[in-house]
Image 1 (cartoon, rainbow, N blue to C red):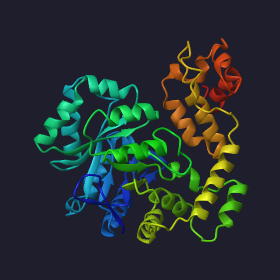
Image 2: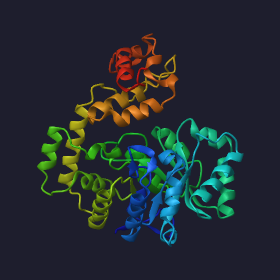
Image 3: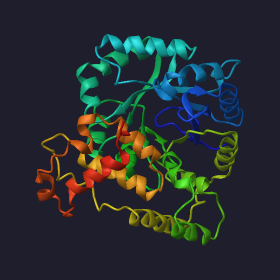
Image 4: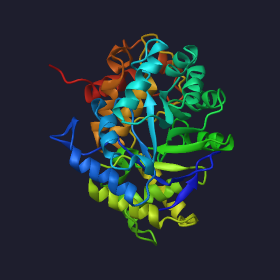
Length: 380
């Protein structure tokens, strides 16, 4: 196992972390974790050198934290640094900060969380937590020993990311990053911004939820096949992430023992310089192939906003593009249906205001109809 210094701390993290968001389940029901298999997978990872385990309150319909707590029995808790997250969806008053942290400590069977994150910070959740004075509360929780270090996970634009980074002396942050998402959310610029500030950077979705390691489009498959070195698609993706020295640890949400073994082997094999300039050029070509499959030429400039009817236009178009680009609508449908109903495409009244401001001259109202028909809730 390879290790890297965790930001400003005098501690090194394994470059592969175990993310407990996609554990094996029974009957395709996310609330029914296959407990014996999941515990064996977590412990196998730790036995082979993984020392960073990440979970969160809502994962697996709130079953992930208790499962992780049981997996870390029998001495395994002492072998790892444990991360979990404060859920903004359920916090309504400052008193809820203690309520959820204490509940999480109980569920995880521990007296402290090594790395505690404000979960899913964005332009809505960050002001909510900031105005509730979450940072003063967190300093108190660190002082009394319930929290070791404070960080945040992030899903929004770069400007919001920079604002949050600059708001506190964070130990670390967690961002979505992979070879497809170099300009998405925090992206490469955010990665470097945080690292330059001394933060450890934990990467989630290095395989983009598995979308970039499933059967690729024909042209992408040809490109992978032309590489001078043979690697699995997962190893290509992980090596690309680890090739960035600003990345501290890449979390992988593994769902099967074979994935655990393959990713552990990759974390053993990786060495700086393993990704050549030729490899990087090939990955750039693969990225271009996927992007050419994107049917809507949206650049996320956001000139279409604000929509007078509240539709999250760029997000709707992005999720539709994702579904088509990767040939797998399941994740896009889940994310679309998780959006507030008043932000979905069927709230468009075809006023045309967005289309007037679109530099790409996209017929946005027409596309929003298609988006909702393809991704929206099933008709009863």
